[in-house]
Image (cartoon, rainbow, N blue to C red; front, top):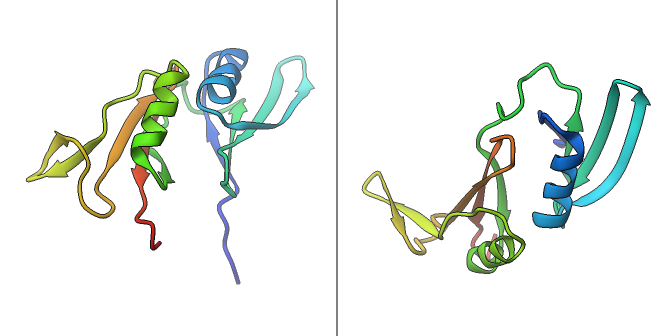
Length: 132
C-alpha cells in the first residue's frame, strides 16, 4: 500500500497576499480557491512537478509557525536565480561544512537555498543529485 503526502496546511494572516506570493513569486500553480463561508476560505497551490500541495486558509496554528518545509530541485542555482528574479528574498546557495553554513555548492544532497513567505513560514530548497 502506498502512503502519499497530499496536502500541507500553511498558516497565513492574509490569504490573498499569500496566494499572490506563492503563485506569482514562487511559481506554485493555483489548483483551486474555494470560499466555504464568509469566514472560511481554502486556496490550494502545488509546486511545479510536485504530487504534494499546500493549502492556505483556516488553521489552528498561528501565521508563520510552519518551519522547514522542503522542496527538492534538480538545479539549485537555477532555482535560486528564478526566485530572486521574481522578487523573493532568497539566500545565496549554501552548503554545510563542519557544522556551519558555507556559501556555494556542496556535494551530493548538500546544496541549499532558504526563503520565507511574508508571514515567516520557512522553506528550504535542496538540490537532488541527477541520478535520484
